[in-house]
Length: 61
Image (cartoon, rainbow, N blue to C red; front, side, top):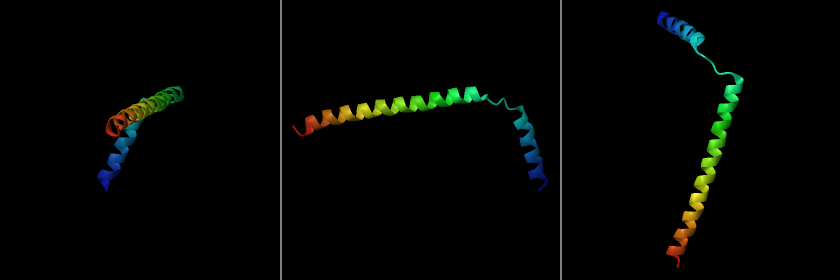
């Protein structure tokens, strides 16, 4: 039990040393993640559509 309290105390001390991002940085980074995810989704949807059309042309011709 003593080791558990010591562990949580050291975790608390380490958390005080963490350099937390500002709200502005968090919003910017979140926007980058969301926009990149949307762009990749659109890219893969387009690739899937084109490959599907090409393959159906060759298979069912």
